[in-house]
Image 1 (cartoon, one colour):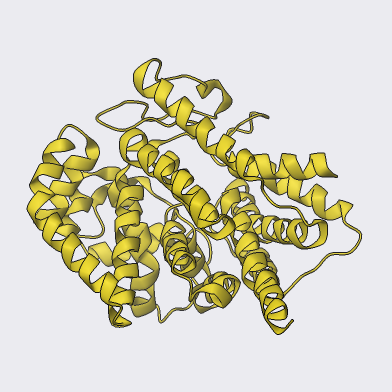
Image 2: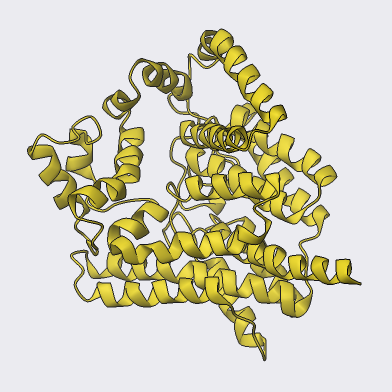
Length: 402
């Protein structure tokens, strides 16, 4: 059983390893291993957040009946919705029933694996270890960063953020002083991805704003200092990244935030998809769209002359389905999709008074707009947060009574 648990955790931390040549970016290895773990456990513990994830999976099957997507894509979509409940359920039971913890040395091995491969790709061979992956898009191309053990610099950046969140909710302050700087280095100097760096910046801004509203003097002073230093050094920062995609997009964003969709196709696709569910709340009264109606929706808005800065022609011509995670759920299922963010909130809520949990929660929600639900770190983080938030909080309360 221990070997199966280690295999499950390994695949959770390395979701892009295409060992079976399935031809997809994000692999279902962790979902398969999680299913085997659950089958091996005689009695299993479940609670409301995990039930909500299973309900969402059931809803996805119902909506498949009226799908406008090809059969293969529809099945793949359903499997995406199956991944979070299986992995979260397996992780939660591994923690609570088997008493398992991810040893810090193993986690450090994971981080160093990404770091070493990224360094070799950046300085020696850009395709180092890429045979383990489905494909290697954007390796040192047009100012983009390296991919490490993922298939895109953007995915490398998202892995760094996922690992950062996991570290903050699983390990102590001293251990995070080791892991977080290593992950920030990879994000800023190896992945160099606009999406992940931007998400981290937004999460920091949201976190500081919440602290300001709580009238916490230290964060007020820190926020003012960051704004002053940022306004002074922004031009220098742009010059530092001027030969990279991050620098180009940073300059365009400062001129006009919405015009970023007109100058970068990848950013255009992601930004349009991220805003789509919120536009749908207004235009479709938060009712479900189902599968395969994304292009029809954004095309209709474009030809009505609405949201044209958010909907470039490239998106209309080359994107027939919405990409992402949380935004996909809300677009497909409308108000029914609120089960997903509720499950995440319910998993974190008992420890949101802690700064590192609150920051991890904010960063996790933002990150979910950019990755597929098949990503194994989604279920792992939900299951981990649920255990440490619920079970360990109860344990602490009992210890205090004693």
